[in-house]
Amino acid sequence: MNRSRYILALLTFVTIGMIIGSLFQLAFINRLEEPSGILHWENDNEATTLRLGYVKPEVLSWSPRVVLFHNFLSVEECDTLKAIARPRLQVSTVVDTKTGKGFKSEVRTSSGMFLNNDERKFPIVQAIEKRISVFSQIPPENGELIQVLRYEPSQYYRPHHDYFADTFNLKRGGQRIATMLMYLSDNVEGGETFFPMAGNGECSCGGKMVKGLCVKPTKGDAVLFWSMGLNGESDPKSIHGGCAVLKGEKWSATKWMRQKTTF
Ligand code: PD2
Ligand code: ZN
Image (cartoon, rainbow, N blue to C red; front, side, top):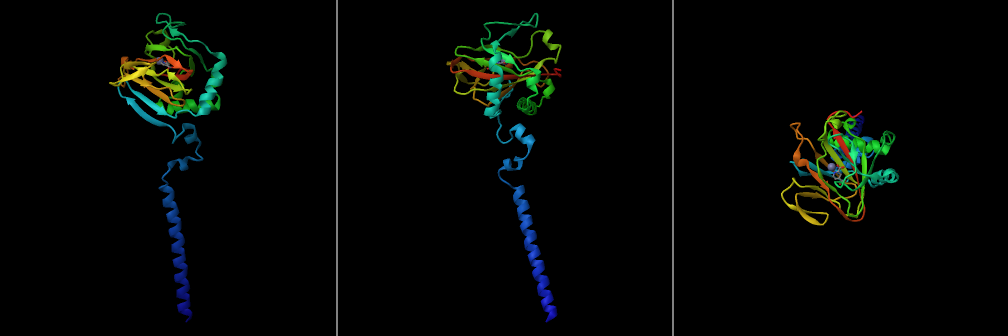
């Protein structure tokens, strides 16, 4: 009698142990198969900085190479960049190919400013810089300071290349290899970024139908395009412009990235 009681108790103990063990296993497997990956990143600072789960890349063109990142910046990041820039805006300039110096021109009619090295250290700017470097795969130290631009109605930037045609600007950092152009405002009519040598369709640029690819300036989105091909040669197909704004104010921020460190 004692022996059968002992066996029964042992069997009960083993069975309960197996049930508890199975429950732990199920919970573990469930964690691995969590359908919404975002939950895993809840307390992950790196994932927050990179906006993983929010940023959605879309390849628009392979040649020239143009990638659109939807939701690249948060609303707070867009508004912070505009707030820093607004009091210091000045008429934008273009580079003189002979001297490497900036001068005012009909080629571009926006206003703009550059963030300074102190503003670059703000945590919110650091997060943007880190995100740009990870998504572009170009080290942060190869980036120039962020430029913020404002276009009012009828203002534009004529088609141009971001790579330098002068040797003066190549001295610090080498050639520009890519640009991350971030859109900071919504409700803009016109103001598209226009790539005449990309795509094979037509699109609306400042209200006019043109051949090429046009990217609408949607707040928080960013377009990454490459001024240099994989062969290390500047890519003439990377020619692009900012179409005229028809209604509203377009704000954008540009990060140009070089072959070498800029500091
Ligand atoms: O702000 C723009 O839309 C724009 C368009 C083309 C900016 C640049 N180029 C640039 O900063 O190089
Ligand atoms: Zn440009």
